[in-house]
Amino acid sequence: MAGLVPPGASPDASKPAHSEADEKTDYMNLPCPIPYEELHREALSYSSLLTSFSIWPETFEGLRFDFTKALNQKFSLSHSVFMGPTEIPSQSAETIKIPTAHYEFGTNFIDPNLMLIGRVLTDGRLNARLKWDLTDNFTVKANAQLSNEPHMSHGMFNFDYKGKDFRSQFQMGNGALFGASYIQSITQHLSLGGEVFWAGQHRKSGIGYAARYETDKMVATGQVANTGIVALSYVQKVSDKVSLATDLMYNYMSRDVTASVGYDYTLRQCRLRGKIDSNGCTTSYLEERLNMGLNFILSAEIDHRKKDYKFGFGLTVG
Amino acid sequence: MADTVISLDKLKAFWNSQVHDEENWAHNMNGRFLVSAFLVPSDFHCHGIRPPEFSAILACSGNEQKLLRAAGLFAGSILLMRNYGDLMAI
Image 1 (cartoon, rainbow over the protein chains, first blue to last red):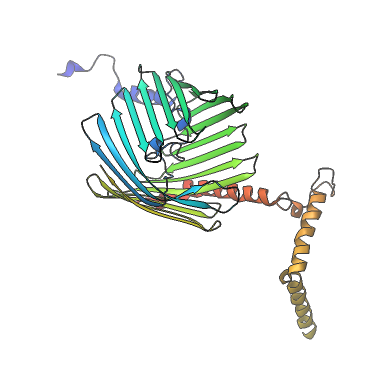
Image 2: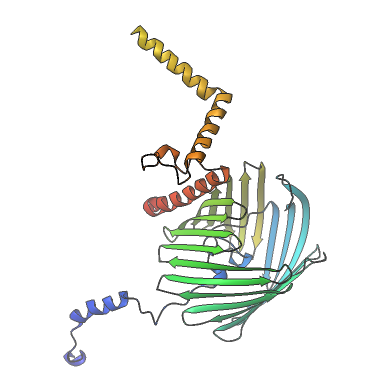
């Protein structure tokens, strides 16, 4: 079988040249960047759907119980109970908490092209989310929060288009809210983007820019906006089980600044995340897998400066 | 020898009066800020070289010190993570 090797082939000589070509950036073949709103997904949490990506967990105070029952491969129901104090915004520096308890009933329909999620709570709130992949490149998203309280209901539509090495999004919401964002891969590791929004009801507009640099070992992001916000984040992937992150949020209008340092340990039976920030607030979140489908959750947030101590525990089934 | 002891005592007394006395300490800190605030403007000349002690750090207000602290924490964390992050691996 000596004739199998094609004539003229010299594999040893061609291999180094081929690998050099791989290392050089092919600017016509760049990867598609991640969506603009998920720029900080490794470091910050922008929505509850992204919490699993985020190194910063959503801490809570009190008791939480979640039960999810799958009726078939696509459809599932969820029941959630929450009991504990809820913080309400106050003008003074003191924290005001009101004890609350509510039950939440939810339905989830998850299909490769269509995702529908609905939640209704005993305090009269309704949350609904839709994500519909019309084609491989075009997605429609919608979300709505309805409430009994006047002027507290919101709705928004997003139209996302994914190109070969760019993503663009147009959004419109109630209160004459319009927004658009665009993010483009510049090199294999760097992507740059920008966004604009206009809120007709409040007669406000804004523009922002963002950059993301990603390698196998680290992700660095930066975002600035004319609303006065500067957000920087850096995530170091130390190993498959361990990530370390730090972020800085600065508002140059209100001169408020917060820096945080955190860690994320993903072990076989548990996931432990925690952070400490420059305001002296320490947070920790533990998810322990007791059994298949049964998770025990412990949450703690200690703010020595405000003397605000939050401890929560919960159970997740399914 | 006796003279040295006396001057040391005087130095200690002076140090205690300036640092451990609340009124004097407050006056000293304010004085430094006032002087540095006066000297920081660009038209101040000190033989063409700005004295290092009147740096921008001294002229900072509380908010700027908070920003420096947060920025220092952010930058320091990045340096530590990049250089010693492997020590945290399991």
